[in-house]
Amino acid sequence: MGIKGLTKLLADNAPKAMKEQKFESYFGRRIAVDASMSIYQFLIVVGRTGMETLTNEAGEVTSHLQGMFNRTIRLLEAGIKPVYVFDGKPPDLKKQELAKRYSKREDATKELTEAVEEGDKDAIEKFSKRTVKVTKQHNEECKRLLRLMGVPVVEAPCEAEAECAALCINDMVYAVASEDMDSLTFGAPRFLRHLMDPSSKKIPVMEFEVAKVLEELELTMDQFIDLCILSGCDYCDSIKGIGGQTALKLIRQHGSIESILENINKDRYQIPEDWPYQEARRLFKEPNVTLDIPELKWNAPDEEGLVQFLVKENGFNQDRVTKAIEKIKFAKNKSSQGRLESFFKPVVSTSVPLKRKDTSEKPTKAVANKKTKGAGGKKK
DNA sequence: AAAGTCC
DNA sequence: TCATCTGGCCCAAGACTTT
DNA sequence: TGGGCCTGATGAC
Image 1 (cartoon, rainbow, N blue to C red):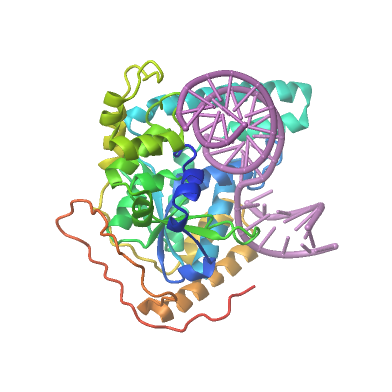
Image 2: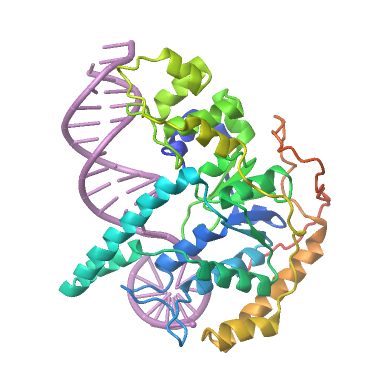
């Protein structure tokens, strides 16, 4: 996933486009998150020891629910309004990449079997993580959980990252939170990394603005997309011998992949056969996304429903769930006091006009900017 | 901080 | 020589509570 | 799975 080496490339060549932010500064903001990516992480790490995970009485995994539940509460307590976006059907060009992952999981499964036979605990630990796959059922369970929590869910027609970017482009959310750099390639105007980290670690939230990236790299969005493709993306191979630096130089020099292909020494650089860079470009530029979604709303939690689902069906501790529900309600009250959208920073500079998707009607969620000196103390 | 628990 | 790309290796990927 | 760090290979200057 993602664009190879893009973080470093931007750090070296567009440092002003990235800005350290505090977790707290997103109070009152709507943030889109790729749900499947989160679920994947939870399945790998939450409560896992070797092949053991958290499970309900039926022996079904509940790690993803535990992770999703805690994280979402954490976000709500920070006054953040999360929108979870679920993957739809992957584009054909990603089939290769997905096949690669599938075969790696196969390999890991074999190695895991061997490790189990040999009783090698370290190896079991290592390989069991590599066999993790997010299933339809995991996704559906998380959707159910989030709806019970009163948190909006969006079902993307295709790639969740692309849908997240589209929500942001159309002002339905303030930013996209992801670890995946291709959010920028999809054109998410504001993109946050490490939003979830800061509690335990000291890594600050890193905010990228695509407009500043373009400004500083002196590229158009189309050129930036070409740069990402050349650097290496999920949709097609890159050219051997061309990494981020060279790609940037070439794009600046020639302006597009077509022009580069006309001008570079083809003996020196081996162009892949059947290189679908144009198709890849189209997937970034005009991804299959929808804006035809229900209004994003953060409702009160369904307390009975949560108890039924988490406690009765999945063996969660009654007390903990009850307390967690209280946290949600408290967080809701707090943020509905500040409902008139507090903001702590002077408004974002939209110096460079962002490219909008062609949308006839804009949901015009014009955020009321009202000063609210809310929520002083963060619970610690 | 480190270790243990969540289910 | 210097810069850059590559490939190999290692790691870590949650969040909360208690000690 | 990606990212950081290291090494060695290979052009670029």
